[in-house]
Length: 229
Image 1 (cartoon, rainbow, N blue to C red):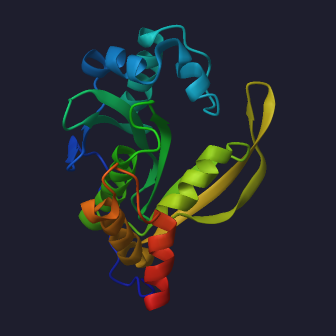
Image 2 (tube, one colour; image 1 turned 90 degrees about the vertical axis):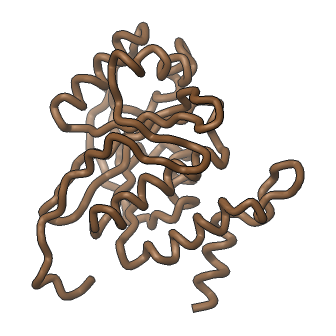
Image 3 (cartoon, rainbow, N blue to C red; image 1 turned 180 degrees about the vertical axis):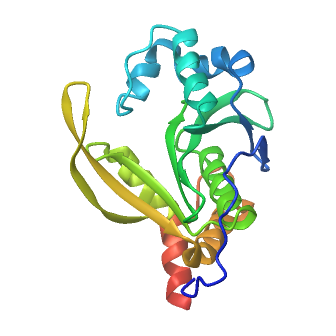
């Protein structure tokens, strides 16, 4: 999108529900989700799962849930709770944050996948749905993913999902008495067509064998499709 003479400020991402074949995403509600989310993330193991978050440690679901309620009430986050369509169980969360409607830019962050969705088609579809809403429903230009530069799993996830590495903000934050360098990734509207087609091909049942193992990876499919252009 080079000519922006007709560009208009977009709406903020505030969906109440987003639906897929495998997962449903619902806006966070303290009374409904705090206890089940805490359990889905591992209860007392939640602090280890979110160790790269710039947050304090949490003793229980009420403390963790109250933090989420506070950042959602302040409009700093718009947290979506990820649940299984089949079992209805809560699986994890992700939040739209640092939204700039005037520029058409938003970050997806505060991502936590519980063990029942980690490294699965459930997680992949959830991120497909989250990105699709931003680009197709709201017409945003830029979708960001930021992370503690020491978080190798998050680096790997961002690259797998189709985000492009942009660089590292050195000494960006002081977190828990330590320096945090922040790595930046992004996905742009003019890249979405290829990324969307890659998600759809990967999620198709034909990409899985009888044991449920993927036949081609997201990166392999995206690379092949890019070469065809």
